[in-house]
Length: 378
Image 1 (cartoon, rainbow, N blue to C red):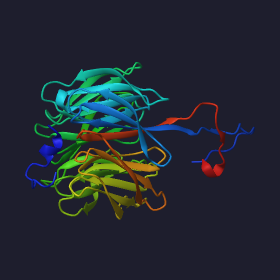
Image 2: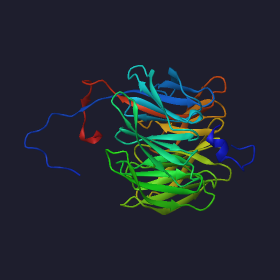
Image 3: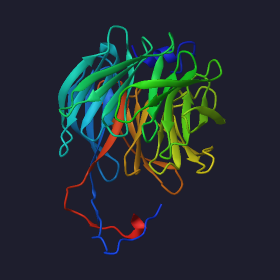
């Protein structure tokens, strides 16, 4: 069954630098317009992976569907070519190739993490060559190398403390650090990673107050701060990342009681952070202070029932929330000057599908098409 039910145990039943110019001027650099944006979700109750094409107004039109092993809970996209799913009910992880024109999916294969592992989330390294799986059932992390044909090759297994129940893994923008949210023992594990390699080396453990329940993690594009959604304590943490990857407290933001933040996403400029509040059925928008990393609330928008995951398209035009309780996707237009969200519509998944994870990818435009980029737009 969904890890959210475990997370919600004990809660009330009602909540769930510039360089010198060369002597000879270089040819004008071409700006290649972005290609299509696809949004993919996994449906926990229907054991399915569904794809949508994003339109200019933020609306979504279904373009793909594939069967998954049992109980898919999370999704990640690597290099715009593969969708990776964490299939909790099957103790497995799967990969699917994306058709760059239509968004259609082709199943590549499924790999078993082992009995009782309950993979809860998947994360892809910045270069798109490695995948890490957080196994909440047996407190391990699975590491895979992605082969040229899209198959996953097992590279390593990392063991967390017994009972840690790792939920999510976040990588620093350059991929040299990996952070693991351990919901079971209120810690964040800090790992060093050599880019180009799968192995993780434990560098330290950040201990949160007992009962915080770290659920999701996100790093900004500058890699200076780690943001933590603490589900049980209704808190967001701002942790400063040191040169060696170790963490120190910068700020602690209290959300209203029973909001239970469970998903974070930061826009590509690093100016705004959004959190899905599962029990409040809404999304909070925060502005990020560019000097201190501190958060300031900008506003809230309603979602469907039990928003479990958020994503944002690469152009930072739209934010999407996937709603487990109402089997729907809520879409919002992002005002990049204020960080505020405006609803643009709801897409319903039929038959109580129970959508759980969501991810978006914007593919590159066609080679050869483009226009010169001015200094102002670089």
